[in-house]
Structure formats: C-alpha cells, structure tokens
Length: 387
Image: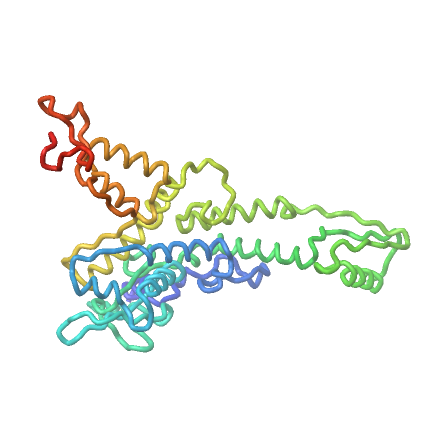
C-alpha cells in the first residue's frame, strides 16, 4: 500500500501535490500564478516562446524514412513548426506535453494527435505503466509521445512554474505593484497630517477628497491644496522608484536562471560584459537548447525509430558576424581546406568558373613545382597543380 502511494505521489495526477504555490496568495493579497497565467508576464513569455520557437525552427535529419516523414509532417491540423513549438511550450510551462502516435495496423507511422497536458495522467499501479486520457481512454507507453521537463522520477516532468512558484509569484507581485503605481499616477505614498483632533468622519472625508482629486493617471500633476493648517509628509518605501526597478531586474534574472536563457535575450540591460553575439549564442545553445534537443531526440527515437540516428543543425542559431566569417573562410581557402567556390557557397553565393580547384601555397608544394590556383587566367586545370 505504501509503495502504491509513493508511486501515485511521484507519477500520479498531472498537478502534483508539491506543486502548489509556496506563498498563500489569498493571505498575502498577491496574484496566484499557474502555468497558463504565467504567460502574462513578459520576461517569462519571452523565455518560453524563444526556446519553443528555436526548437521548432531547427532543421533535423532522421536516418529512418518513416520517422523523417513524420517529423516533417506530424499532424494534418497544423504545420510541423506549430506542432513542435506548441509541444515544447507546453513542456516548458506544465512540465509535460503529449501526443498520441497514430499507426496503421502494420505499424506504419501516420500522424501525431496532440492532447491537452492537463487531461493525461500516468498510471503505475500495474506492472506495465500506461497513460489515462479523458478523450482517448488508456494509451500504452509506446503509443504516446511524451516530452517532459526535468522531474524527480524521470517518467513524469515537473512544471518549472510550480516548482519555482516563489520566484514567479514575486515577479507577479512586482508587476502588480508597478501597475498600481501607474494607476495612482505615480504619486508617492503621502501622509496628510492635521494639527487638530479629526474624528473618523473627517478623516474619511479628507481621504476620499484626496483620492478623488489626485488618484489615477488622469490626475497626475494636479496641485494639492490644503486647509486648516494641514501638512504633507512623504512616507518612504523600499520598492519605490529605483528600488522597484532593481527588484524587477532581479526577477528577470530569476527567469533567466529558471529556463537557462541569457538575461540579455530577455531585454535586460546587462552592459558589454557578455562579449560577442556569437559567444552569447553558443552559451544559449549549450546551456539551454541542447537539453531540449536531447529530450526531443531521445523521445522521438524511442517512440518512432528505435534504431535510427537523429541530428539537429544549429548553424542558423550559432553564426558569427560577417567579419569573423570572412576571416575564417580566407584562412581555409589559403590553407587549401576549401576551394573558393566552396567558400562562396558558405556565403550563399553562386559559384564562378575556374574557382573549383584549391589554392596551394608556394611553401606547400613539393619539388619546387609551380603552384596552380585553378582559375581561368592561369592556363592550368585542377589536374596539373602540385598537391
């Protein structure tokens, strides 16, 4: 019985018992955050859409023909890009994303049928686990494509939003504070001090009069007129002005740590310490995207082609600037590793006649033979130069 309870605790319902918010929002008067509502906050929205979009647009090659066809056209209802983006986005938010693998009676792959992540649970009460779905009933493990975020068990992913709810709720509270400040026209917290003894009715009337005349963005800058010897004192707050801005930047850093996306990709002003864009792109690919590429590869091969190989092409994400590209191509051409037409192909330029033979430097020839550059003006061909 204890073993079954532990199994249900680790693999059980989609919303795990430990995923509840660590901060009771009803007590602290701050917004509650769920995987769906987390998309309201721009740093988190940027992080998850960036990762899911980059994973979706990567070129991928699968050695098995049927699996490659399914990768190129996984669903009749959406494009391959939209399918991969939505699947990755769900895993980033809910921790799990699912699609039923539809096959013919002979086992040929047909399509992937997406399922809402909150409609699926994993049942491990039997010797062979299986998925329970609201729409399609029970589904065997081998017939369910299951992309998952890191989790305690390895069979069920945990929602980053729910595991790190403290950081996300703090971001939500900061956004709410900033919104409230703008609703009040950016007015600081003030205390209206009366020299005499004002009863409760008088205090209520003064407060309502002040809010009527000065609260809201439409009343920003309105002069304050006091009577009966009243004076105003400003009440300091650690989250006003620069304090609130610093706190919001810290929350952007939290989102960066949560998903592995560099802070500068979330539009945070980080200065020039990050170095070149090429280095930043490589850090993003190595520290963030490579994990999700590995998750896609492992699940895709296991469920669609167990003996196939699969590789992603990240050249479109990690590409140096034009100056670095030209310098590296020049070095490769002069060393004879690339022909000039091969270098032109790297720049998406058309080949030119006479540039298909490699250049051989004078000090690289044997026996003092003449170096042939392989162009039309040399009178030679690719067959008569000294290797």
